[in-house]
Length: 123
Ligand code: AMP
Image 1: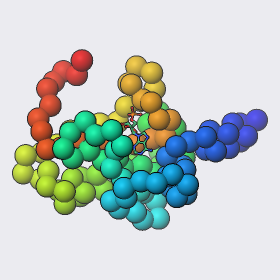
Image 2 (image 1 turned 30 degrees about the horizontal axis):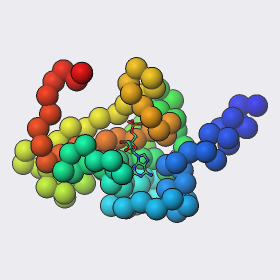
Image 3 (image 1 turned 180 degrees about the vertical axis):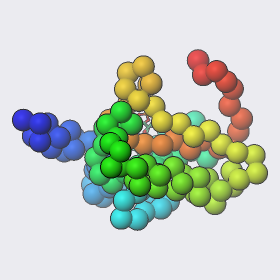
């Protein structure tokens, strides 16, 4: 039951389809574990997503055994943000989670938003 639920969510997951090439994306970076691509509805001049290739629903699903993967996601987000010109002025790195976090796609992703300033606290 548990495994069939995972399969159902992967089959319907937009980001898994992007990973498999079934949905087009503007790819920025790819390796064995991680994919980065531009957000389809950018909220800033630079807005891209960094995702694990393995289907993980959200940050609450990470295990201690995922430490390397979680580190890869974060460091890759940082490296790409610098490559895309955010190094000097910085950027907003965001991980939304579930309903209260405003997550709309149930596949873990790091948003990187650059090219403008953001306020705090969030609304
Ligand atoms: P979140 O609300 O944190 O779950 O963010 C999901 C993000 O995925 C939103 O910023 C969407 O604009 C973005 N998104 C949804 N579908 C696509 C897609 N096919 N290609 C690129 N970005 C997408």
